[in-house]
Length: 173
Image (cartoon, rainbow, N blue to C red; front, top):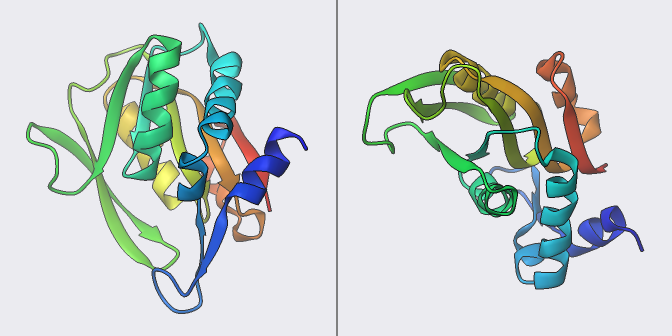
């Protein structure tokens, strides 16, 4: 099996989470598999080595893979957090989710003008979270070099909200 097949086989579906009617794609079982986890990180590192200055991971699952990718790339890591979690001056963006609304924040000094940022998260669903994160990165003067995902749920059309950004998903269902 190739990496995409292994990733898909390693995920589990959680019905009616976080609300009724949503089937949550849980990638936490992948975290228990050190070889698969290492292959996922190595795949991203190979794609972005020398092309990014910083990795931004989206709370909370984007922190996990994003921090590992940043470590292996030898670049900094920036957390993109839910509202009220960062202690210093922040940029904020509110956006619609497939099941509600949310606000994300980034420290105003998290990235600098001209830095190339790799945005990392686990799942692309409707695209609101990733579009908000890209807006936050750009509000700091940096550019989004690419978006790296574990899973894309194609039928939800999230990629359409990401305009001209380079988007890579290990698995699309």
